[in-house]
Length: 261
Length: 262
Picture (cartoon, rainbow over the protein chains, first blue to last red):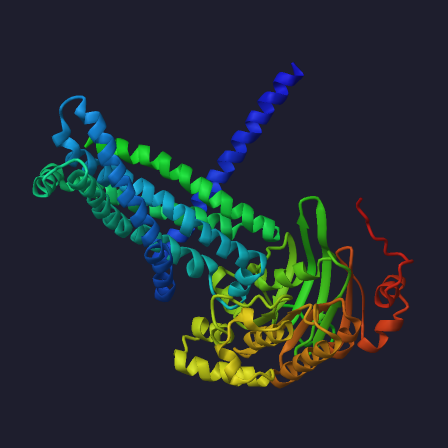
């Protein structure tokens, strides 16, 4: 009986801990978002964060997208050949990339690169008193450090996904024309004929949400890190893991919303 | 608003300040008066709550109980904007400098001017160079990054950043820690100079008795969350208080016992 009660108590503690964590992250996010719209503004910090999240993530996102498009074309050729539907390769590639793989893979890549960097930078600032120093210099750290990154995350990832969409289709085009014997003009026509605005828009909305989540988890974990180098390392790991899980969870939620429409 | 017996309002008045972290009572009823234009040095063992005390005044940590009055106005009863305005009149030199490593030295020094006073960048650079000169650094240092500086230079830049906006109240968190004795004396000299020049009130916390003697107009000893002794720097090494004497002379035997964990 005692063991059962201990087990129930442990589950209860875990549940309460998870609820507290969700509450803290939500309050952190609300504070960060409210700082985006209230002056003073720090455009230089937004520009820096845009470069860090967007521009410097471009190579890794581009490579991921182009290889994903190539693999997708090869795999769909194998599968669709069983139904004599090889002509659908173009539509399958473009829909998969724009609706799903572009935003999810770009989000995961940015979480691993920029999210980790954010957590490490803010974590180091926390354990070396730089965040306290900001406060003593009459600067709200949430406004100066967090708000620009949240805004930049929500802007940069959709831009990256536009590039990823184009390169993903290009990857499929390369395989379809060079290896599978498709006519390039026909492949592109099929791609555009089956693509609807809604496909691209749903991917870009997902990307904006994922970008915000990556920045949120990077900032939250870094901002609240403790205990020196080990604490910063733990914050970095937590930022990448939590952002990756949230991306996949929110991907389902957003897909459900767009699926209904 | 309250005043001591002589009728003058102290620059900083602390009464009954308490702060606990979990079961550990770090500050347990601190009472302090710091007259305007004077320098108080707070000494005490590691973990005695010295840093927590000044972080409470700066608003970096919210105390559990007590009163902190700046010029007779209770900081803890102020709304957020008024508190921010009050904190804007303070400057802080952190123990490790806490320089922003993503900014060059001159932007570190001018950060408060750019953020708080909305000074144009060209003018901020000029003022940063002037403040760097006050702490004995050439304008060319302004173009370096914090990672390119030695420990002593980082302290000087931290000091320059703390005084750039001419604060009324200055805090120094272990200003000589990690420096050789000569550089420590140089930093102490700079602190005394800038505090006199600005006419500021200063609070420093340190373990370094030589540093305390050089900086202080008065010294307070913090032990087990309370101020157990206060006096002039000349009385520091012969206070007549067993706890203070053990601490200032660095004796192993005495009323202060170290908790050793195996």
